[in-house]
Length: 93
Image (cartoon, rainbow, N blue to C red; front, side, top):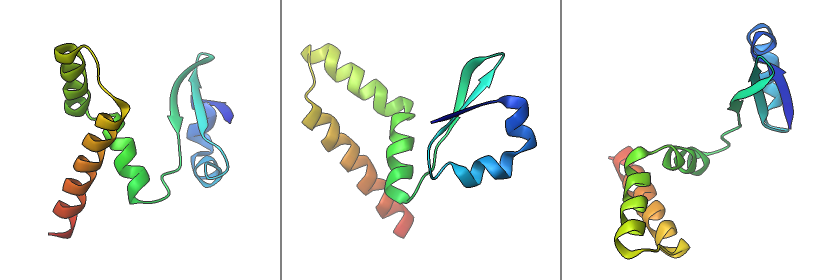
């Protein structure tokens, strides 16, 4: 994993973009991590990435965990798979 300051990333953006297939890049601001560049290799990676940052999905997981006092990993996988299928079907339509 590489680290680089935001100014350096701005100056060498294309170079860093070409190198993220080897390892993610942690971008720092004033010496502290503030962002990351990661390679998305295919649609599934993109969907998984989007699910992690999907506020509605996270709310559903939190709601279920609160209501039942637990949620299984299998349930999370099912919900993510369902969301991915929905996304794929909307892309093909």
